[in-house]
Image (cartoon, rainbow over the protein chains, first blue to last red):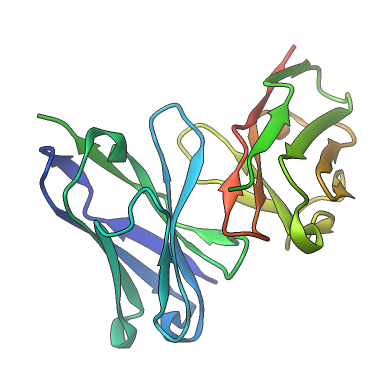
Length: 115
Length: 107
């Protein structure tokens, strides 16, 4: 059974940095595709990033240059480093598996960007 | 960017009724690369349909998807109490975008 667990969210001031973690079990991160998807409070879903099995990552324009994904293959974990955070980055961040559509999701971790 | 517009915004129905949800794309979705998700309050989305009409593992057959090009439909043949939720469509043919969601509420 595939399980996905995010952590690392919290309250951060505008301009600050935060790193989210995504731990996966029942699934080999290095051989598959991993995504970050976010959802602002009371709003819809927004795709953030897709990491291929070879480690290449694509980003949404809204986060390009500010967010970076990395992986720890030995621990089947993925990380989202978020820099220069803005109020509009406030959201629940989900980690999800899948190349095109997203078949397994974590429960999400809330990031609040506020002074 | 492909914009997905879902309608209606809210659908008020009774258990046992049929639900028809629409997702319209601003341009043709490549190869029918469209998915549907269900989301309940406080929970992560759950994949229902991919490839416009293929049910994901474990999804009951009362859920069906159809459509191509720019017009797609999710149909729930007979609503069960657990089906009242928000539904999102997603296109993954050109990058990835979601619709704004349709809430299916109990009438």
